[in-house]
Image 1 (cartoon, rainbow, N blue to C red):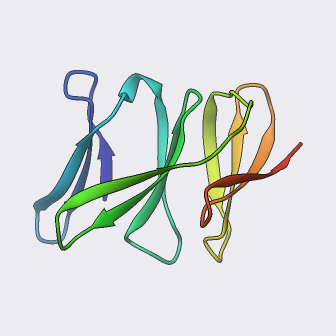
Image 2: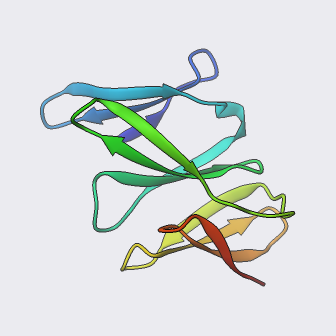
Length: 115
């Protein structure tokens, strides 16, 4: 399970809820973060989105750390509010405050389709 901390600590925290232990955390700009969504077929990757920020995070369980990969958005600046990941964990479809629906390749970290 991944959790967004509050503005007082600015952390994403990953926990093993079965064992009740913290696995790792990472300091981020939470005031710009709106959601975290895990991949469907992996407990090692999730998407984090918000104000002009879209990243795929990989959990390194062995070294207890998070590794971020920024998705290339080009000139596009949006406030991402929601996301759905396809069943194959290849694309994420994101909604924004402007009403756009955008598809991103979350395996290779780039914009695929814009409507």
